Image (cartoon, rainbow over all chains, first blue to last red; front, side, top):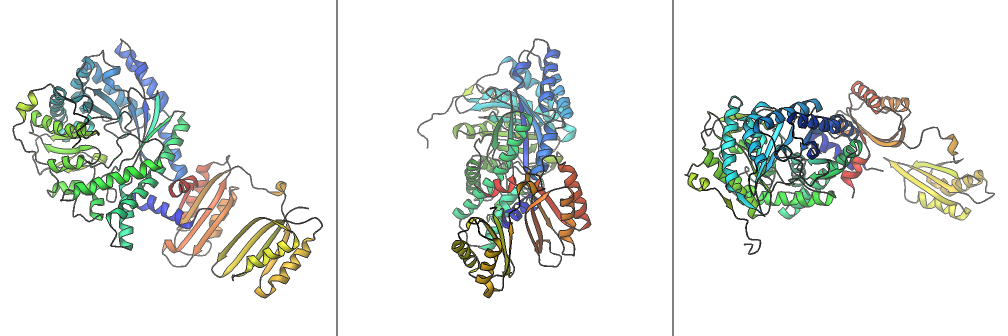
Length: 456
Length: 184
C-alpha cells in the first residue's frame, strides 16, 4: 500500500515544481536510405521516418496520461546527414533539410536533429557540402537542427573546421537577420559529441546506434530547487554535504520518471530503449530554472564568485542520483546553462554577472557549453571561431562534451535584447572582447590531441 | 471447512490484536491474513483464519466476545466468500485517484458513484476531511483496479467532470509512477 506522503509528495512535484519528461526522442537510422539519386534518397528518408515516427506523439501522450507525467517535447534524431548524403551537393542537402522539416511537421514534432557532420579529424566532401548548406537550410526551415563536431579528446581540435564554423555561424545569422539570427539557435558546434543525445539542438543518431531507438531527456530544475528550499526551511544550518545528498535523491526520483516513461514508449513503438539523459534542462518559465538553484544555495546570482564550485557540486550530485536510478545513462547528462532559455540566467546576463569568460569557466564543470549566448552582430568570424576554439579546448582536455550555440545578433550590440521566442526565450546580448584573435584562427591545421597522462 | 473472516471494531487501545489472536491460538485457528487500521480514535481489524475441523463459527465468535468484552469491542464472524461470488473482475491495472479541495458534504459519495458506475473496484481508500477550504486538509486517495477492457479516457473524463462539480483538484495516475519515484 502506498503511503499518503509518497502520493502527495509526488503530486506536489508534478503540480508545483514542473516535474515532467522534457523530451522523448526517437532516433532513426537513415544509413539504409542512401541512393545515387537525390529524389530517391529523400523519398526513402520520408518513408522511413514516418513509418517509425508516425505514432510517436500519440504514444507519448497516451503514456504521459497514464502516469500523469507530461512528455513536453517529442522529437526525432537521425543519422548524420553529411554521412548519408555524402555524395550530394549543398543545394541537394538544403532540399533534404526542407524534406526533414516537412516530415517533422507531418509527424507532429517541433524539432528534428541530425543535419550534422563529424569533422574532428578532417573535412570530407560530404561534410563540406553540409556545412555550406547550413545557413540556408536553417534559415529556411523551422524544425531542423544542425550540429558539427569539430574536436575530440582523441583527435584534438580541427581548427580548419572551427574557422569554417565561425564563418558559417555569421552567414546563418545574416540569413535569419529578421529573427535576430534565429538559425544559429539551431546550430551547435561540439567537442566529444555523444551519439545518443535526446536534447536539441545537438541530437543526432550515431553510426554505432540501432536502426531505431528511444532516448529520453529528463528535466527537473524546479524539483531540485524546491527540495533544497524545503530542506533549508526546516533546518537553516544544513552543510553542503547534506544539500548535495538532497539533490542526489531528487535527481534519482526525476530520473526514475524518465526511465519508466521511456521504456513504456519504446515498448509500445516496438523499438529498443536507449538511454536516459540526466540533464537539468531549464525553460524560460519561473520555477523551471537552473539559475534559481544558485540562489537557493546561497549565492546572489549565477555568475558571482562561488558559482563554479556550486555548479560542480550540483552537476556531480545530479549525475550520482541519476546514475543510480537508470540502467542506461547517456547523452549529455549534466546541468544545462542555456542563457536565453533560462529566465534567471538571462537576468544574470542582463545584470552583468555573466560574461563569456565566466560562462566558459562554468562549462568546465557542467554540461554543455556556451549555450544560447547572444553576442553582438558585428563580432567577426575569426573572433567567433576563437571563442569556439576556447570552448572546444575545455572539452578536449577535460575529456568531456562541450559545445557552443552562439548567436551573433545582426544589427544589435551588447546590452540590447534578442528575441527568439518559445522555448528558445530571449536574452541580453553579452559583450565580446575583440582582442585580435584572427592570426591564430587563420593558421588552421589541427591542434594535436592532448596527452592522457601527467594530468595536472 | 472454509476459512473464516473475523472483523473486530471499537475504540482503540493497546492489547486488542493480542487478545483476539490468543483466542485463535487457543482454538487452533491458523491465521492467514490480518489487516488493521485506526481512524482517529477507532480501531478496525479484519482477520482471515483457517479453523480446525469441526469448529463452530458461532463458538469462535463467543470466545472472542468473552475475551474482549472489557474492551467494549464488537466482533463479527462470517465464512470467507468464494471466488465465484467475487463480482469485480481480476487482472486490472492498478491506478491511484487523488482528489483535494474544499470540504463539503458528498465528496466520497460523489466520486465513488462514478468509480462504481464504471465497474472499477477500490482496493484501498484513505480519506481525511479536516474541514475548511484548504485543499491539503481535505484529501481522498483511492487505490483502484481498472479493468483492462475499460476505456481509460472515458473514465478519466467522467471523473474530471465530477471533480469540477465538486470543486476538487483530481488526478488519476498509474500506481507504478509512485512506486518508481519513491521506492528502490
